[in-house]
Image (cartoon, rainbow, N blue to C red):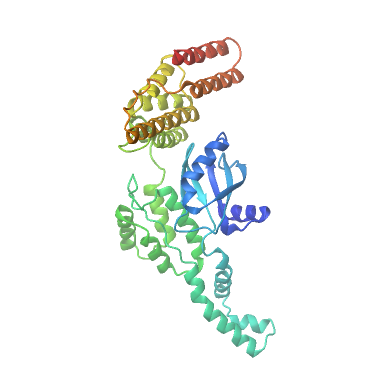
Length: 392
């Protein structure tokens, strides 16, 4: 279980698990700069943080990172997902009640065994005074334990695009499954109430219908039905259509669109709707035809397509972020000139070339190391031709 991994890792590193976050789903080829950038964008409301280590998890085919905060986790601010390279990264943290779960488990165990605090105390040879003391303590802490282990679920409505304050189904499901495990000692009726408390719209209507049909359904049954309806069970044709019709939304950053498109591509590849070898080609085509590009980036990508050199996901994301940084720099320059009362300079036709040139050289070296023979030579010539043409 991810929470157990977090606790064990924190214990081994000698840090408090209540100040730790476990980030799952980081691509193996995500470099340090991209990792820090994504974490800073998502975790800045929680204060300063430090990445203590990374490890590759074979079961996820991705990297996990341990993050230490400078204070205990703020449950109102901690995100369930972090937008990053390769799609959203899952955030795992110790549930609010984990430190007090021991008492809850003791009471639940005694109840299952048909025992009471008094009978256990008697078996241990404790006197009447101590028995009374144990009974009073158990009665006093039981409501406190119940309060501590109750943590509201996030909100899920069943929409394709979650509204403000709502969560995606994957993030909601991850948190809900953890909390159902924590609520082991809670009555089934209360579990259902807490589950429905976090539902809205069609998701809530579905659970209402299930319980109207059979009021004896458990919270786990309702969750299984939600997974069947809203989980990742799309057909190959549906996934393929979603990939080929994905487009940048109004107000959506280009880098956010590229990340969203990558999630769709990877789902389609996993389901066999697209061949892995075609991913770079499809990505390039969607960005060129379904996104709003600056003239320099549009020209660079079209020249790459013309010579048959489709950028990988990381290469595409790098170019897009450079383009966004260039646009932001131009906007700042224009604002500064406007404030000084100067006439704005004409916008340059292309982005500054040194960074783009270095990126092209990097691609060339990668091609050189991964290919051999005549094919390699042709590949190097193609990339260098594009690089030189972009500098012309």
